[in-house]
Image 1 (cartoon, helix red, strand yellow):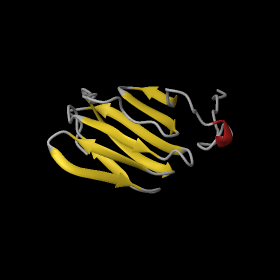
Image 2: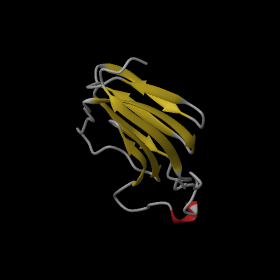
Image 3: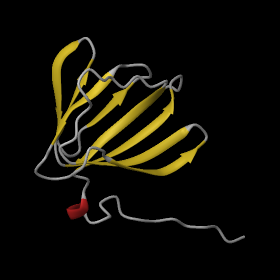
Length: 119
C-alpha cells in the first residue's frame, strides 16, 4: 500500500512575507489523536492587553528563530526567549505573549496535547 508523504520546510513560505497585520500566521502541520503540531510565524505580534491563554491542553513550544517574551499569570518575571529556547506550559496555566521581534520573523513550533498527559 502506497502511503502519502507530506513534507515541507518550517521556514517557508518566504519569511519576507511574514505577517505584518494584526494576526500571526498559524499552520497546523499535524492534528491526530488529541495532538496538534503548529508552526506559528509572528512579526511584532503580542497578546492583546488583558488577554490570557487558558488552554485545556498542555503545550510545548520552541522558538526556532526571532525573539519573544512570555508572561505567566502570577509570575512577575518576563520570560525572554531566543532561538532554541523551549517551554512546557501545563494545561490551564494562564499565559500570554508579551512581545515578538518586529525586526525579524519569530517562528515557533508548538505541540498541544491532552492536559492529563505526563511529560
